[in-house]
Length: 185
Ligand SMILES: [Zn+2]
Image (tube, rainbow, N blue to C red; front, side, top):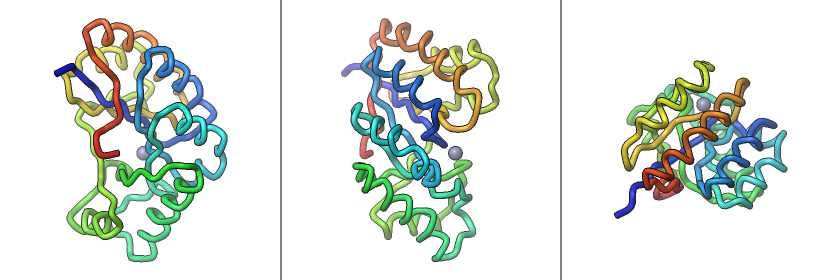
């Protein structure tokens, strides 16, 4: 079986998502973009491009809310309203990434009731801290087959993220890795 890693991008879409899409396209890499609903509402064209280029656009809540401790109305707003907008943008993914990775049994129950499931990660590139391109590249080159990689296309400083991908993806491809969407998304 071939080696594979699963790239994921949180907190977008933003204007900076496009530079990441361009790198992914160069190396025939597919990824999951966990989008924030209020950003989707602002960046519909970028969202449609994510879907059109064969990536998966998935749910990262409406307001980047911590899902633990939400009441029913909160889950409706954060999960269902985002899912409804995703559907209008052409995505029917049932994958959810809990903001901050914050989850518990109650959150999992709420997701299951909605036919959704959470997707965590096991490699954090720490790109959100803007640690420098070399740091992000080191994290990417340290992966093993089957790893789910956390990166970001929202917020600021995404030039580092795109530049690190531009350096690491050809090296990983050379090692025999394919870049695919997380199974089940
Ligand atoms: Zn996030």
